[in-house]
Image (tube, rainbow, N blue to C red; front, side, top):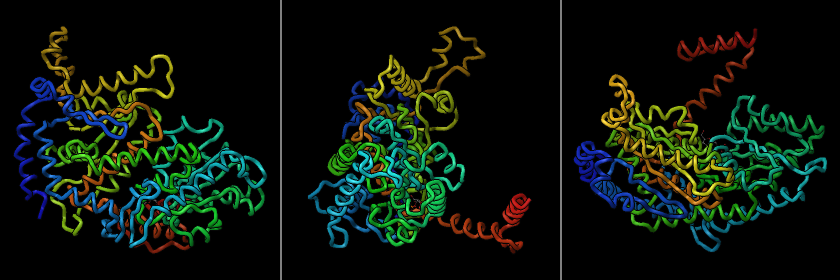
Length: 540
Ligand code: F6P
């Protein structure tokens, strides 16, 4: 049955005109308890969703939709380890990565939690040796530089978190992330590094990804050439992967490999061994705090009623905008420089998960699925794209993220930062009417230009400070939000077949580019011409 045929879906459609006919000004004026009623807390985070184009009635109708699509049963199936990734026949158990010792989660009859903790313990012991200087490079020097070679989930999560938690890392250590197959990425990342002090983490779930393996080979050549000894690889390369065979083939001793499992999706893997760079940055104890933050949000997600459940409320509001109010994008605006990479991280989490066009059983969707996710930290975005948010013709729901306490309390910087966050959310929601502009004495011709229509929705997420735990909880919040939306849209949020075709074509075109003889090209006329032009330019 199409989602459109559900009575709960129809009830939301019928409700839409009432919301379109009102304004946030009117909604706040008519309900003095609105801000309190539409604020919920969990795992160190407070969500104020009162500036959303929704009433308590809207939320009740959205929760009815969640009930109608059996959200509760689907949450239980994920936590139970059912093979909910049906197109790859896999369980989806990133929640097991933060399960405490002693909890039992079975995959095919085997408890996976002891294995999770065994890897975590090995990672922590390894990081302690590197950080203390017990693990030395090939020439006896301490490791000061960590370079993660990975892409997608093997890059975005660890890069985002290492940057987010930089405050907690030793100042003398440098962390770099090389993802692009563009050689400039590697060249610039190592340009000022001493190879004798550099540790490479080759991070790839499959250990077959073109970009990562190309960068890893280049890194190995660079290191061996600079240190003049192939044996140096043993002290300067470790691997993070599910594929021990390929790791060994590459030349990394599997004793220096940190494993994970096929039930961890790449974009859900930063709390697995994929987070090794994060652990090297913040140490084992803080990494456990990070995991505890995830876990706190997991527990809230499982236990809280849907209308008081942070991931569920954010997800349902997203569905409301996407499917009923016509929004095609969603902006995430962290008012914290440390979270600079958070929007990029979310892009993969959300768009690779819910950028789907068929339902779980392969039927073409007749509702809109995942939005375009984008964003930049505040206040920078204000001086770039906020014009469109305030006065453009697109409806862009926004998530504002901020912290009450700064990790770098310098003068009045933090108060100014937070004042801007609150001001932007207020201006978007309530705007400035033509009458108010006129009352300021603005010339009539300028009034339309200086009017702010308002009614532009946002949520505000606040935590006390950016810590490993609040970061973990924030990531889990969005992981579960994406899951809930996938359930509502009835898509498989855990596969990514859409990335395959380009990979296959690129392999073929790379062969055609490299061939000495003029290749017989069988692409379309445009692609054929572009390849010929490139071959010609390359050969001079
Ligand atoms: O191309 C998409 C993808 O498969 C992502 O889902 C994944 O995170 C990324 O490539 C990297 O994959 P791997 O960790 O296997 O190198």
